[in-house]
Amino acid sequence: MLSIIRPALLACSVSLLTLTAPAAAQDRPASSQDQEESSTGASFEAGVPDAAFTGERSRRMMTAQILLDRAGHSPGVIDGYGGGNTSRALRSFEKAEGLDTDGELDDELLSALREQVGSDPLVRRYTVTQEDVSGSFRSVPSDMAAMADRDSIGYSSASELLAEKFHMSEGLLAALNPDADFGSAGSEILVVQAGSAQIKGTVARIAIDKSASEVRAYDASDTLLATFPATVGSSEFPSPSGTMEVNAIAMEANYTFAPGSQDWGGDEALVIPPGPNNPIGGVWIDLGKDGYGIHGTSDPSSIAKNASHGCVRLTNWDARALARAVESGSTKVAFN
Image (cartoon, rainbow, N blue to C red; front, side, top):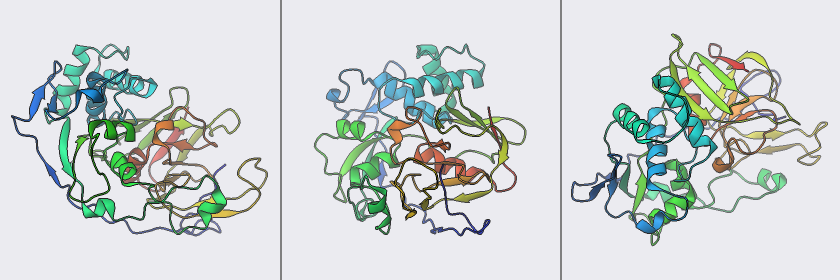
């Protein structure tokens, strides 16, 4: 079970850091000469290397993942590979749009996605900013005691930061930019043009479907606003059942490990500072039951694949989007 420091709740206090709005993206829209049209009507930069799409990674799958991300049905990490998270997102989109729910990526589904989200290019040029590379990049310790000795648990590299910024895998980022220097401000790279990581509306109700490994967000009129792939507990550490509510939100949360009767994590109480690579990804939506919440992760590619210790784990960008759209004391959360 997780133990998170929370704002003046019970005997706890919280370490909340002020978030600074990101600087405006230094990007250049693709010109018509730069773009090539795929069979799906999706625009790509002419500079996208064919070698990026080898093996099972495909332009078609990357197209679907980007469009799903924009449509509010997160596929998790955009990597160009098919898998359970993308199939889940496809089914959720189909259900929301009243289409046959089979999770199959066909031309009809791609057309429906494109019609909903518009014709903006899927890949764009981005100039790496000084802000992108000004952090102190260090490898992340695997040992929690070593993490606790640090001031923050930040990104291990500029490529990790950039990949997460654009909802991508580092592998896809590298494949699109085989010769790029991600650590130098001024470098021009290709990135996917994913969604805004914002939910349009206020979330009044969250449904957590354990069997589908999915989180669904609804507004007060019960309109579905967004869906996310999620890691929901495990057989050893099951998530709770029933209904709770959002009790507190920490956009930059530290992580407190209290050993108690746990047989993992050692026998020392530890406070691990905030950051995208701490055990909860630095984002925490508290559900009012001690130690349970919805949070981010240090490993986005593991979502809906590995078990959690009872909580609900999302990618960091999905957790932030959800955290910005919920309200303490009024957003209900139901596990089923």
